[in-house]
Length: 293
Length: 280
Image 1 (cartoon, rainbow over the protein chains, first blue to last red):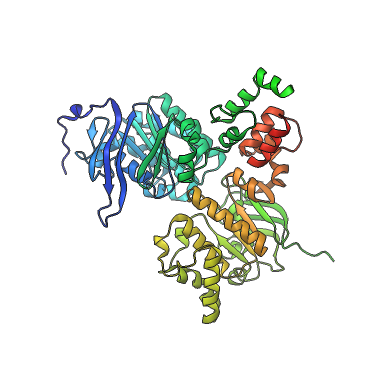
Image 2: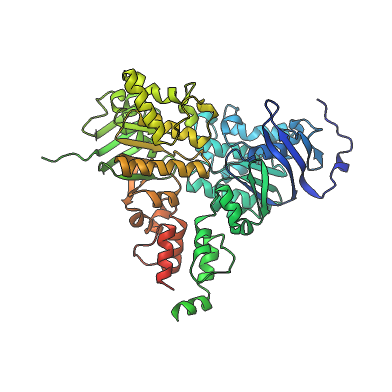
């Protein structure tokens, strides 16, 4: 397998950092179609959430996005590079992929080495590596486990190390597969803060999750997968309001969103995505006056 | 004479062999038969350790230094062998795949019964009944690996139920499942609790789900019980829960934000809608 470096610039036609065009994926053994023809353009800097039940094609789609899988037909272009033409290692500098299971990802003898591995591989100077490791240690509060073997720490913490070790690579596109699964509220808050931070820095974030409160807060856009098909694409507010899509996929909006949709005297207003939003609305003078009357 | 509760734990302290601080510290807990109890807390707060103390995995299989008194249905798990305790306390863990070892679903359920030496005709009967309870009738010959996550977790529950336990401890049983699988597992646990009187102890992070299903919430923090009571009693203490690094259901937080006070707040969606209706 050889990397074709020539013509990379010409491949970026859409202005998107990531363009999935009519991509279809059939697993090589058997004829199970994991993904029907799917097209998604992701503008640089967007925070995109992907939802759907297990087996709906979410993970297959994200693996196409980082070149781990190549489309059976159609194309996937990331940062100007067609994934069919580059080895997955060449894609890694552009797309960081955090596995749902950190055991599929971690292998270094200590957490500190794990954090340094990615940037060292990218040719970052030792000084730069030290700075990135220090930043990640602080951000994810890993001070106490830096010297430990990744398998000597708890699974939830190991998952956080998996995220931190991609964070130090500073990829333009950051893909997270179920980052909050099995995590407590404190760690979920850290992951929420991470996604906001990445977006502030101009990274593109793609997050697959069942955690609707997380996605309602961090995603500008949600796509819904069902049976290998993309069946909805919009803002979280639009998607959560689409009762047909939510019902068909058995997905439930965050509790506060469901509450706002059923709240008496609120008919016709768009659903609230967060607690703060609904509290602010509830406390506006005209609403308060209406309740007094 | 004072009779022990179904689950009676007094002054339980336990430190793992490699641990630097106690995983559990002075825990006192009484659970009545047929209760549905939820353990909440940050990772490392002691939820799993407490669960593993119920059937003697601690201290027989995971070693450490312990003290205190534990009585489960009259048995002392520090003395009674784990395989005996397994008839009383069933265990379901977060990753069903790790619990699967057999070629077919029926064999998976039969495994524990074989180990107990249950006669064949009774085994067949119990396997069929357990698969039926979790809605997997007809899946007997299927490979556990070919099942969805939710089906696998239901199979893990069936394998446990075949032993006819009176207590079921579930450790984050749905953290690897999708929303459909999550609902399946919680619905089955509710049915086992209501219809069969099985005592449920579940460790789980998603407070909205627990407020819907549990009779009692026990909040653990650094190995100690920090708060306990009905979901309304515990979650209405929004600030105390937040101080422990945890959160309450979103609707409770909403009611707290717009009304404040020290009264009991709604903890479920339905409760919150009634609450809102009353304030129109």
